[in-house]
Amino acid sequence: MTASDGSHRSNAHHGRAPHDASAYNSDSTNRDEPAATHRVTLRSPAELADALPYLLGYRPEDSIVLVALHDRGGRGRFGGRARLGIPASPDDWESVAGQLAHGLVRGSERRGARPEQIVAYVCQEPGVGETGRQVMERLRPLAHNLRLQCGLLDVPVIEALCISDGRFWSYCCDNQECCPAEGLPMGLPGTSVLAAAATYAGIQVRGTLRELRARLQPWETAAALEQEAALDASSRALVPRMLDDTTRAGVAEKTVELASQVMSRLADAPPASGAFMADLRDDGLLRNDEAATLILGLQDRTTRDRAAEWMEGDEAAPALRLWRALARRCVGSYGEHAAAPLTLAGWVAWSTGDDIEAREALALALGADPDYLFARLLHQAVNEGLDPESIRRCLRAERDGRAHPVAGQLDEARGPEGLDTTQSTDGAGRDADGTDADGSDADGSDADGSDADGSESVPGSRPRRRGRPAADTHNSRSLTSKEARKSARTSRGLPGAGTGPGIGRSGGTHPPAAAKGGVWRRGTSRRGIVPGGSDTKGDA
Image (cartoon, rainbow, N blue to C red):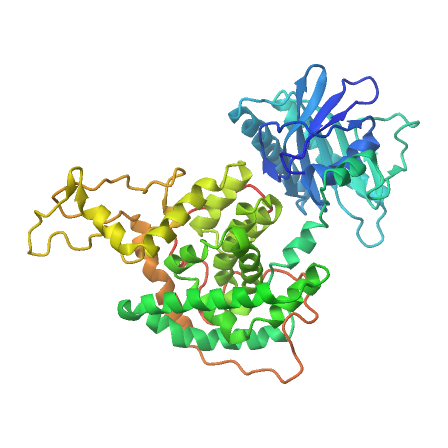
């Protein structure tokens, strides 16, 4: 549920204090309590288990989830929540439990609301030949580590539940009357009191994260071969022009123009039923050569920032569909190129209030390129529950500045007492807009939208160029050098007829980080983005 959807009450069982739970969409974040508009009383472990999808906004799978509880008038109120995938090796469980507990508690403290208690969940479906009860027993040490690590932070776990194979178990209760060893069946989805309240509030629980990620991951069908060949051809044609300062701006303009045309095409398309059919429709409306041109063009940081301006109103929905489609086209050795469209998808989702898809798209972007600063900053902002409006204001200002370039130049030339006409004619004072050729960047601004260097114009002197981090200066060229090496590769053969985009596409796995043929391996310089470490929050 979103922060405005209300709060829920949970009366604990076995004599524990009741808890008032407020639900938010969040994997690893803490937010302030929303205005209470809908309240539901949860009285048992069964109702706590049933509440989990509504607390997260989707149905978790293969997940560890911690939910903070805050005491208010004798009732516990749900606060922040943190989720991570279950590590495959039990040797990692202790450290992961400690990191997750520490992140949830310290994040709550930063907002002045240290949790008094925590509810823990472990969710995993049985493997081949395994039962739900065997999963519960296998994950018992993980639940024990979660309880221990939270206890070390002086925040007790009042309930720990395992959900598997349509049943749930409590690790905190050994009363066979209410928590039998064989577990208890989960209620039918949509039949609980909480589900009824959510329906009344107009709230829908999504499917699983796997289904959401499938919309953003590259093709694994025969159509991927045709797309990779188109990417090779576009790389050879576009990279030399992107390297050339005299033609780079023209490539950027054509990229933005093509993206706008495709968005109009998507907006005019008839509706489709279901996410898979909708993605299949969008894939059919985007040609391989168009996708390749857009993917290559978005590797330019300035072009990407201009594309980020399609973030609200009627432009947002077709833009998000386009960025999803482009992310699915980053196939084979072009896996790292997905960082740009995935970041744009995450940004538009966040700007339009969909924190769940935003977080997943940005996590996948960081998986494609851990040094992609724009994705890293946005991922952190989403996890911390910040307001995207400050970034929207910055991007609106960029668009308005391009729409009125003459006025912008006059504003730069004016001093405090009006237009300055005392500049010399020897060349000082040129570049009246005071910016580099690539303009300012969404990821190069402070949270309030101000320039990173904080410089101001001085009347009567040559306007100062807007500062750019040294790493950006280096990386503005690292993209094109890398692309130039890729463009020298020979073309791959095209597959035979009968293949089509999206047909038979599965969720698949992410392509390997290292590119084929020794190109774009990890350790080389990244594309035109300030280097930075990947965020530890979200999915590993």
